[in-house]
Amino acid sequence: MEFSWLLAPPIPPGTARQHLLYQRLRTAIVEGRIASGTRLPASRALAAELGIARNTVLHAYEQLGAEGCLVANRHGTRVATLPAREPPPAAACSGSPQSESVIALPGLSQRARAMPDAGGDPASDTLPFAVGVPDIGTFPLRAWRACLDRAWRGASARQLGYAPHGGEPALREALAGYLTTTRGFTLQPDQVVITSGTQGALDLCARLLADHGDTVWIENPGYPAARTALALAGLRLHAVPVDEEGLAPGAADWHTHAPRLILATPAHQYPTGRVMSLPRRLALLDGACRSGAWLIEDDYDSEFRRAGAALPALLGLVPGAPVLYTGTFSKTLYPGLRLAYLIVPQPLAPAFVRAAGQATRPGQAIEQRALADFIRRGHYTAHLRRMRQCYAARQRELRDALTRHPGPELAVTGGDAGLHLTLWLPPELADYALCEAARRLGLGPQPLSRYALAPLTCNGLLLGYGNTGTEYLDAAVRRLRAAMGAIPERS
Image (cartoon, rainbow, N blue to C red; front, side, top):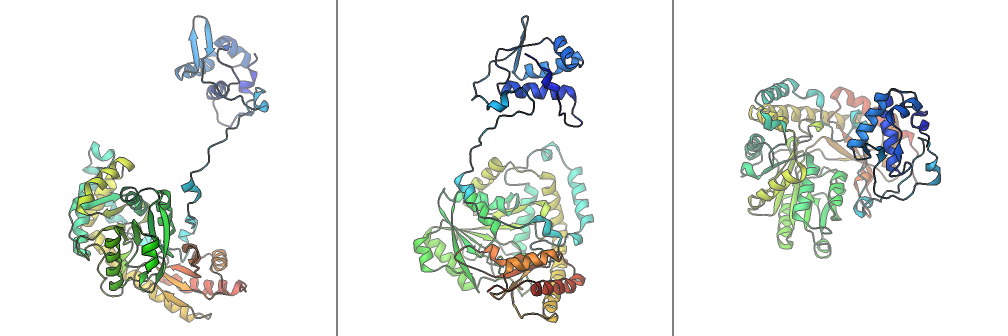
């Protein structure tokens, strides 16, 4: 049997010959092109045939022997007996290094095939009107670096491993104190579970509080990434419409689609920006208690409320109500931090802490210690105070610019809190087409219709102002108005 093909072209640039020889020999053995029991040439003979140093062949033989592909004894080097495989296609038996057998991979799961499209394009996060992107340029980097330096100086070997189950104790304690002060909660640090983003919190809730196939209510329109997280956990999504007071379930929803979980954004509904009224909150809590459902309260941006005092959170509004509360640092600090938290009722805390540690093996222990220090020293509160004023000024300028520049008069919602406004479009102006035109002009708004599930249809734009300075908003609105005039109206 000839082996000259082992080093035949093409040879990838920068590939060492000893690695290439090992790789091609291994592939040929695994694919069955060199049969089990085949005696390979002695190292000197193969080196002479290939025109290479003997050490190159020895390296390949030794590595393949260590992996169990070759067996060497006083009778020579032979291919080990490997599990039988289906013979490769005829074209793969020519001995050419380019020949590869093709394996038909199993398909995706039903959950994956039914997964809703989260949409979005991370490349647009730097464009004006990008949604959900905070002003990273004003982040107090010097204070944060000082906290990181202190965390590293005080770190032990434990902080270089996985984070403790539930998160670093220092961060859980700092968060419990912060939320008690700012949101009026009564909670203990052991009720705080640190997660990798809001999706991590939702995944924990789905897996610990519901069984495969259970029904979860989601807002319609609502957050696409939350839909994805819950669908991948094997839950059945039921879209409940949103009105001027937030999530608006009817009698048919309660009776025909009885929920196990209910996901809501009562403080600032995403994406419409509506605030759930107190009567609606109480009715939702009452319905959840009667139906045996858990409420997941996503309070993703309540820190940026501007229209007076915030309404009470669902958590704590009614003592003993079945509510879990989640918040994130992606909007208040920066998205790349990937830290969020979940507040769970005391009886559930041990199970959630155990699951968070065993299922996800959390890391970022150093960053968690730094964040605890950042909160304790008052940097977090001071940063939020500055950003509330900054975002309030940007929202005012955005509203003024929409009025200043000529174009159709459009309804605007979502001004009570958050980092975006929702611009409602007339039916003849398709939001997807408008977003494409805006993208060509260097803008990054999102179409409202992307957030809705059938049979509901929405037509509008989400205009983020978190990443766009006040001085740039007038020009951005001028370009947006130009995009509105550049697309044909649909009939």
